[in-house]
Image (cartoon, rainbow, N blue to C red):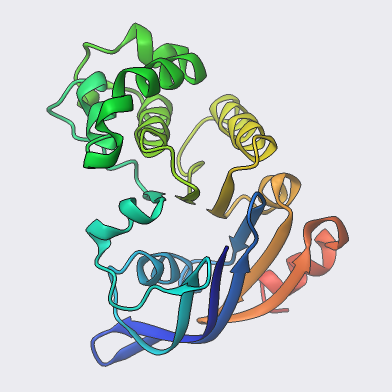
Length: 233
């Protein structure tokens, strides 16, 4: 579905990604892991058009992504749930969700998608009139995920969903990711909780210093070997 070939990208004169090639197969969960500074979030930003790609190619269903602005990605069926939740703090839970269905093509289905979001995240229904800024970290992450799903994306990109959350909330979020995968939604997951990320994935990429150093089917990953590569021992 999504394919990146020999991609380079960075910030101004500072290049971060060095000839990165990754692919996310339709209906599968692809996880990208690596230590801080490996280039994972930079890679997601390049996919979403937030950073220019200076070399290489990116295609979605065979069509080039180069030149597609960030705000045009929703029309292509792509949604990103960013690191740090980034909810609209001074808007209610329900208003945040509605913003996720704002693209014109999806507005007619907003009420149906709200019901789906509240079914998936019952706590959001209980707090739908509450300001998003007053939610706990776990509730805010649920809201960010619910908002991302409001456009019924064909490709869902999730950046560090477990960051700073209690273990029980992390368990709940990974159960939801597993259900989404079972529903044949294409997912790219960036995550530092290596064991949980590999456990839910179909394919695993490990990045180090802006490069892909491992590409392997999740079922074949040796966690001990992965840890050695992760810490560059």
